[in-house]
Amino acid sequence: MVTCKLFVDDMNCTGCAARVRSVLLNTRGVVKVITNLDEHQAEVTYDEQRVSEAALREALKTTGFGTPGVPREFCDNTAAKT
View 1: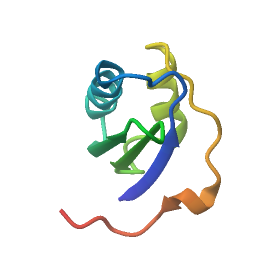
View 2: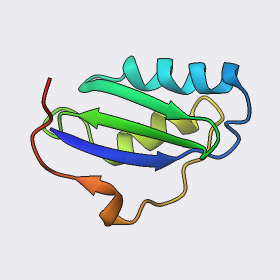
View 3: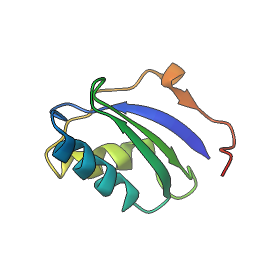
C-alpha cells in the first residue's frame, strides 16, 4: 500500500471535499481517503498494484479538480495498517 498526499486545486468548500473523497474512494484500488479542506489536500491510501498515482489524478481531473505534481517526499511506500 502507498499513502500519498495529492494537492487538489479548486477544492474550496465542504461539498468539494466530499466530492473529491467520493471520486477517489470509488476508484479501483483506493482503500482510504482523508481530505483537508484548509490545505487543499487529499491523503490517499491505495494499492499500487491496482491503481497508479496518475490514475488518481485523472479521476479528479475528469470531475473538474486539478492536481499539480506531488513531490515524492509526500508519498510513503510502506504498508498501510488497516
